[in-house]
Image 1 (tube, one colour):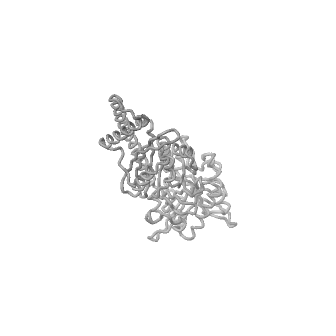
Image 2 (tube, rainbow, N blue to C red):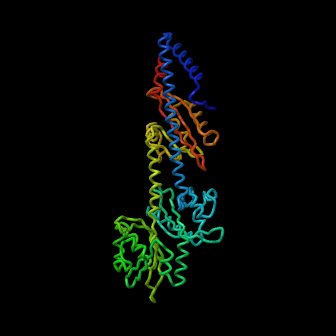
Image 3 (spheres, helix red, strand yellow):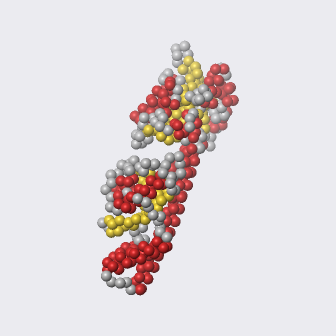
Length: 453
């Protein structure tokens, strides 16, 4: 069934008014006086203007929502680190441009592939273990992996993995550490690790004589902490004084794992107190570089990398998402985001409450529910309105039209209700649409009065 453009033209509006007026007069059996007819026509004209104003506000709201979606997409796509989302089995369902670049393939060809399959064979068990630990503990996991490239040069990647709260997959951050790893290997191989580390890394270097329990810091770290370049406190305990109390247990656990032989290197993020008293986020990485005859660790070296900007970018991204979600929840319309198959990806609070009140089963915001099933809540038993709505949604998702609008009504227990439905396409690689239903019953009251005469 086709759909008509809404609102109608002036001629169409007049024809509808004349037909409705004639029907009401025939039903009442009493002709309207000239004053009554004039008043009703004035009310109808006012109602039309009010609906047009509502349409302007609705279109402006959708435009602002589209701008917010584009902004967050840009932040996501052009981040300097790779963002990858997978399902519970590790199949990629979303990634940004940096992530695709690190994985060495076009983004479209990576969708649906398992992340572990893109790594070197000897690294796959490591990623699977990280995923299992994250799923079992509901805590973030971190590890280093190798990713093969078409040019034959393998990339060292720091993989930070966070499980989704719903248990439906993982969010991952991929940071290319190939350059730093190459520097570390070169420094250790030449036997001049301390001098070359100081020259090659500007963030900060530490050198720990484990047996003597003496820590040496580079100039940059000494400046960060506001202390001389002599050993900071002389012990690991002196380092602890500059690490945030909440982060120290995690850092200590990583160091102890190296000392115990469970691993030869570690990487963890924590906060450090700067010379001015503020807490800065850094990434601490260390490697075992010496053993005694009994096999005990005698020496460790490492680097501290300032990741404050990266953390701020991630926080800004979360803030934009929060603003977008708040706007989505606060808009005074029934809103839903649909995928290319017409299934619900997200609904706002107003839709959720209305859907529940209409007898629908709430499942995580009606996630993955066919929108055709939910339309009954806002179209009642009006099959023609529902068919027109579905046709319009299908055309928008198929790219035939950028938007679709429909005015319809149905009779509920509270009387006749009027809605304006607007469907807007969301720009992106995959078909998406935002659907809104605005209750304009109060604006339509003059028409309701007319039907009762």
